Image 1 (cartoon, rainbow, N blue to C red):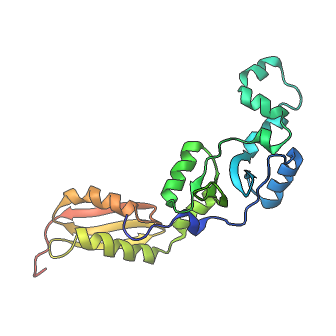
Image 2 (spheres, rainbow, N blue to C red):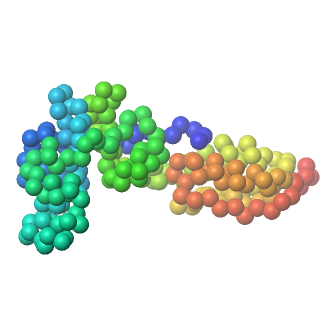
Image 3 (cartoon, rainbow, N blue to C red):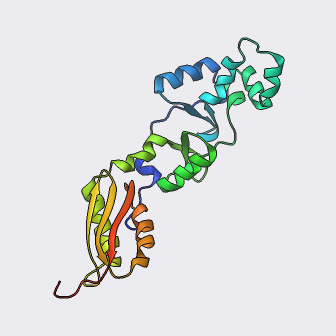
Length: 220
C-alpha cells in the first residue's frame, strides 16, 4: 500500500467501559445500556484484559428463562447452558479475549474481527494492558476520506508510475470513493496490478477501468 496507512490508534476509543471478574449481571446490562456498547472488556490487576463479556454471552440468561423443553436444551452448546446460569462477568466472559495492538493497521483489525466474528476488539499493549477499544464503526471511518484526497494519492502514487506519458494517456475520476480510470494505455497487462494497488488505497470503495490499448505519440 502506498502512503502511510491508518492504524488502530488513529480511530480507537480510549475512554473505555471495563469491569472486573466479580461484576454482577445486572451491572453489566446497565453499563452496556449507558455506554451504548455491545461488549465490555473484563480486566484484572492493573488493567490486564482477561476476557470480554458481550450481549451474546448474556443472552442465554433470557433464552433459557422460561425453562424450555429438554429437547431444546440438548441442542444448545454446553457453554451456552452454563452462561444461562452465570451471574458474574468472570463466569460469563469469553476468554482468552481476542485483542489487537494499537499499531495494527485497520485492515489487520478488520480481518481479526471477521475471523473471531466479533463487533469490537480491546486494544492492548505488549503486556496485555487495556489501552482502548476499536469497533466496526471505527474501522469504517476510513471511507469518510475526501474524494479529492483519494484522487491525488492514486494519481501521484499509482497512475504516474504505471501509466505515465507518452506511452499512456489516462484521466482519473473519483466519486463517492469509486475510482474510474479512463483512456489509453500501452500495456494492458498492468490493469490487474493497478486494480490491486488502487483498492489498497484507504477510502477506495471500488475501481473501474475504461481503457483501450494504444500508445500516445509525442504529437498527440
